[in-house]
Image 1 (tube, helix red, strand yellow):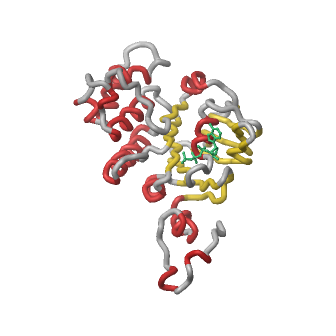
Image 2: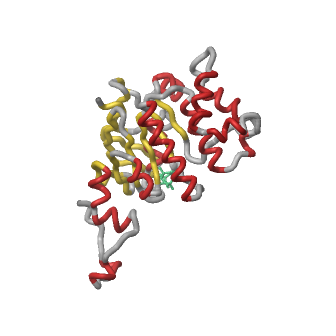
Image 3: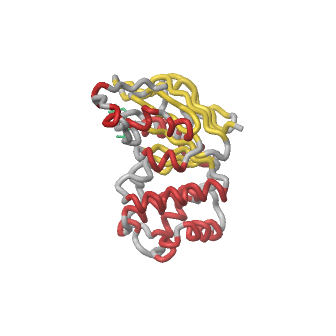
Length: 253
Ligand code: ATP
């Protein structure tokens, strides 16, 4: 079943058109990665899906209901949660208070969910009384994901979870993302510049370039593409072939 369907989406910042006819589908239970260079439009796509930007064209359907233009609060209640780029934890609140805020849509006892977050991120339990602003970058990313989980989302969107993290921490975070997907059946849509880790973790992916999808498919197929290997994974046989690198052009096949 398709959980999220984006069709022909166009989003602009005044005169700047950031997305030009973008279409993506996210199937239930999948991890889907959006790859793309700086400025490709990845964050804009996430913001439009999360209700933070209103598209000028196209439509977004979540679990069978049109949601383009809907407000974020309603989307969170429907089961769509965004972990934004840069984490944006509440720095003066404790770790546990941040987690509780993630469950604002669900009144009542949420201690079971907090324990579940601590199972996935034991360091947060150790630091539960500490101010979130005093955590390391990786720990803040864990807290941001934990806070997103507290809303019990069907679909979790992660914007650049590896930003500013060491390779080791990035592996750890993506390992937990894969576990959340497998064990808690959370469908994931993630935006990532680190193509290596994204393609290892996701089931399928899309490549976004200057506001357009230029390639899509299962990650196994994307990993096998020469263009992906050269321009996103940094591998090249050019030296062996004696071909000048600058002569290569992306062909997106
Ligand atoms: P990054 O990886 O650097 O975050 P991105 O792929 O997420 O990049 P977006 O942030 O979605 O890209 O930006 C897409 C385009 O929209 C870019 O051309 C960018 O300059 C433009 N843009 C983004 N935010 C604004 C804004 N607030 N005002 C005007 N233009 C913007």
